Length: 141
Image 1 (cartoon, rainbow, N blue to C red):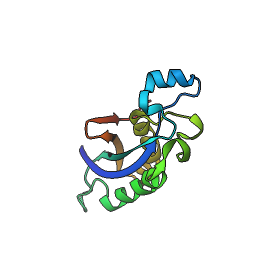
Image 2: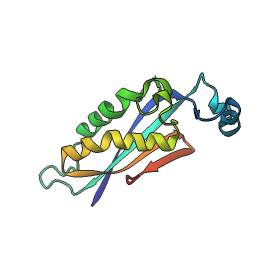
Image 3: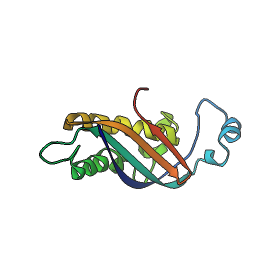
Image 4: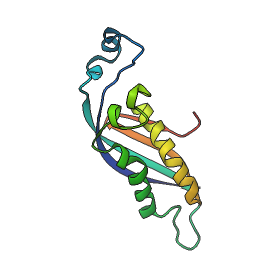
């Protein structure tokens, strides 16, 4: 089994807010991240696929195809967007756009495309919010 990872970057803004809580509770739990104007990050997305190399091409997946899938499924929806307002997963208070939830949402966006392409399976999605903070998701929730 070979693991192949493709990295992409995107910029987006967000805030943390739980609609079931008061403003005071949101401030207490999320601090400055609860400010409704939001703040931005330059995120790094790593997508890892697993499989056996094709005996003819030597590829687990075609990297050009994987780049296109990442752009179509994730970057087109999230890059230069306010996640709370523009991303369907997070708009209208559906999910709080934490690093953890971004990793899960990216998986859900990518997994059908990788599966449909055949030959490999999605193994891991990693999202860096900052160089020091990242979340990994390997499916299963």
